[in-house]
Amino acid sequence: MADPKRIRVEAPGGSYEIFIEPGLRDRLDERVTGLAVGEPVVVATNTTLRPLYGDRLAAALPNASVVTMPDGEQYKTLDTVAKLYADFVDAGLNRTGTVIALGGGVVGDTVGFAAATYMRGVRLVQMPTSLLAMADSSVGGKVGIDLPQGKNLVGAFKQPEVVLVDTEVLQTLPEREWRCGMAEVIKHGLLADPVLLEMAQNGNFDDLPEFVRRTIQVKVDVVQADPFERGMRAHLNLGHTFAHAIERVSGYAWPHGEAVGVGLLAAARLSYLLGMCDASLPEQVERLLAAVGLPARLGDMDSEAIYAAMGTDKKWQAGQSRFVLLRGVGQPEIVKNAPPESVIEVLTSLK
Image (cartoon, rainbow, N blue to C red; front, top):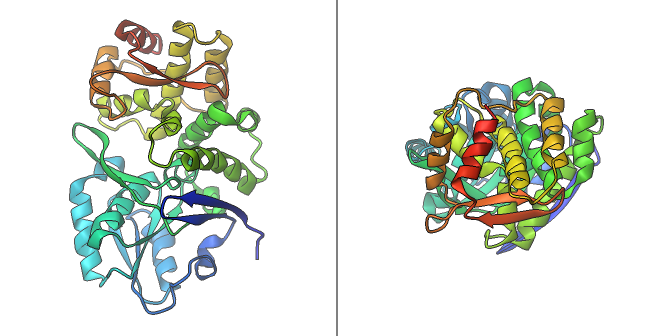
């Protein structure tokens, strides 16, 4: 058996383990207690991943069934959650059962929210299948769905029983999905780990479990210090105020990771414009985006429309803008009430 990378997370109400190892999807019972004692298990995934991994996973577990949701950010909605509730009932899921969220960030967030609220909460196992979900959304206990007015406006804190990261699935990940995940890796490197930036710049992914472990560790360190996002956890929103608005204005034609990539560059340029850092920082971010193949320009998207879309961002407070900016690598800072004209100037510079 592969020697796992293991991270222990201390969370409110208990703790859980993150296992990072290749082939983990074929050894689930070794990492999740209680799956073989007769209680119902629901593998919840999307229509794309079900034939790849979902059916085989459920077949290997006792008392397991598969439920699916459509594939795509546009389905991260209350309607999808209502359908999941009905599917949980049909599958015989009770309060002692387990839901395995198998998929990328959309599956993890949506299924996680359904698990948090079905029968006031059932056991949840996060099993991310994309680099983006491994690096970010599967860790930290935040689950939720979008409203027409904005992203992640409905949600809950739901800590998983365990997070299972099978790095083998990354070998078949579409190239665009890999690039999207690299945006979160670069974000984590900018926040706290320059080694990740070197690995991204040089394409050094030979030890994939260790690469994934490093990026997960950055998020774990932050969420353990601030589990309910009352302080420094907001640093994880670096680039995301821009990104969520870009996604919304594009009608979600821009995938999350690509929007985060441009959002990181926008945050770096705004940091420079406000005198917080020198010009080398936005130049470094632009080089990193180029190295991993992420876009660095917005094209013909309207700058003022993007700024207006930020007004419903849940990170803003009492109508005041809040951006996570950088004084340098490893030096994030929350800046309130950045001048609107400065934000729009930055967005216009990215056309």
